Image (cartoon, rainbow, N blue to C red; front, top):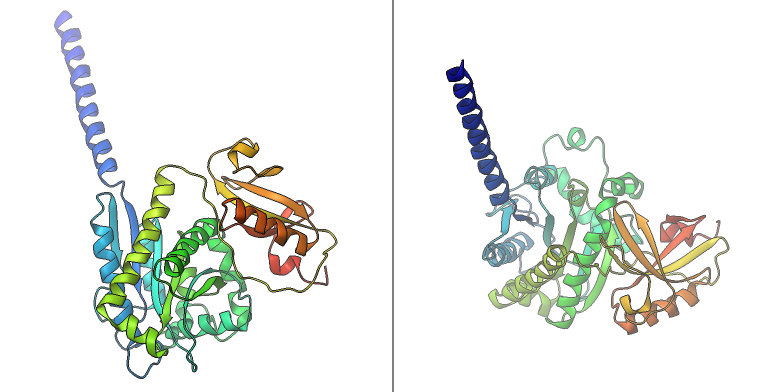
Length: 368
């Protein structure tokens, strides 16, 4: 009987050791895979050359910038880079999103070049959202038109028409929870383009890009400049220009990751949604959003660079911090300027109705 008990004890100890060994293996595997994954998407490719320009090919420039950016990111120990394409091949928009989602990516960054019939220049970075104006829609329409080159596109996209402004209204819902992070990264990118590369800053914008709609993580689409502009086209087509653009985007991603690693409050970015000359909007409370993050901070002035009267709210799992409140849009713009002067360079205006946050375009509709 004692031998049986003894054997059972040995068996139990052996089982615990084996379980512990496998637990260590599982934990080690999980830790080893705990990388920050960035999916880099070079726009167009293969039979799709991209935006038309006399001397340059958008697909080649976008790919070159992506490969240079990827090489920099791969040099960081805990960063994993996944490419939707690393050569001149055609990849449909749905497949690009599938690659990102399957990789369980932390970021999706799509690289493009712009084009126009005049010598306009400058960079702009988009997040998914409703078209604020006709110009944003035209940019999205051009980038979305690639679906016409895909086989069975009507079945793939369930009748989505890239030429219809109404078709993208439902597209924003799936990306809404990632909007803050997307805006923050987009703002970093534009700031670097403007302040470091001295490029013309055309701003952070929202529009209905199909490729962004397909992803389930913070996502941006970067228009690195106009290849139809003589000087900017030459810059983007040069190795030096591509290195500089890749380096600028790299620094923005690195800063974004640093904020996540340190669990810092993320200062968010303005989005050019509306341009209104109206003054007062009864029933609407405009506020200046200065920060967002996972930390619950006391709304004392010492936590917010001396700003007094900061209000804290919570949307989903993220705390939002607002400065000021007014139904007078001009007044809230002045408070926005105060916040930026205090150090919140990317403070932006948000709107509430009945205590619920609403789109700025809805808030500033005079029919309210």
